[in-house]
Every structure is written in C-alpha cells, then in structure tokens.
Image 1 (cartoon, rainbow, N blue to C red):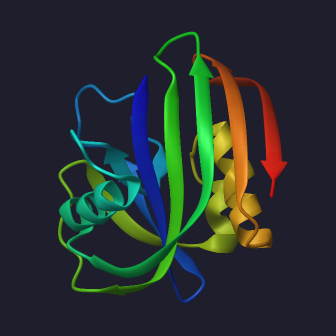
Image 2 (image 1 turned 60 degrees about the vertical axis):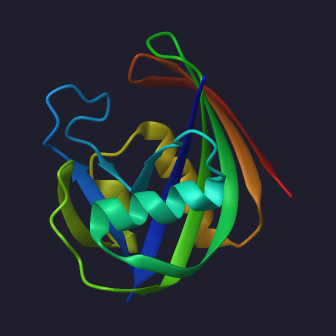
Length: 152
C-alpha cells in the first residue's frame, strides 16, 4: 500500500501542473499532475504536502485545504491512498523541477491535457464546489474501469 499527497496550487484561474517527463521509470510518464508525492517515514499528510511542494516547486504553502481522499486500485500497481489538497496562499519563487516541467494551466483547459482519466473526474469536482469527497477508482493498467464518488 502506498500513501501519497497532491496539491492543486491556484493562481489567476490556473493550477500549477507538473508535466512528468524527466524520470526514466515513471508510472505517470508524459502525464500532467498536481504537485505532490509519497509519504516519508512518520510524516502526516500535512507534513508530506508541505515538503513535496517545497521540493518540487520552491514554493511554501502558507495555508491549504484538504479537499478529498482518493483510493486507487489497479491490476498493475499496489493500492494507493492519496490526500488531495488545494491552496491559493503560497509564497516564494518557482524553481526547476527534476521530475518534469512546471506550468500554470488555465482551469478551463485541464480537460484538454494528458492526465489520468480519474484525475479529470476529481479535478472537475474541485472546481464545482468545496465539499469534502472520497473517490475510489478501479484501473486495469491505464484504463479506468469503474469509480465511486462520495460527497460529504
């Protein structure tokens, strides 16, 4: 089982996205993702997202909101539980990321870029309202087979 975090940093109607192009072995190769990564030993979700954002972007999150939790089930990889955060309160200057290219993408264009199929579902949810949600995805390789979304 894998524990991860992801943050969608917002500014001027755009999300800061990472185009995953630089790692040789990468399950998300050539896909666009928010900023985040795997938990380190003894980290809380908050500590993980603060560290990952700083490492990948150079930015410091001044405040953020936990928006949802995703469960990924797949035939090709271990089960993953991902905490989704959003933030529009940050400071610092962007740095070069060793995992790919950082770019501000207009929220209206998110559906046009290469993301995981399931990510499109929760990204639409993030933009529609502020209710907390959970979603469970079942994948066969890259193909989304089924999902169940719950709102609270």
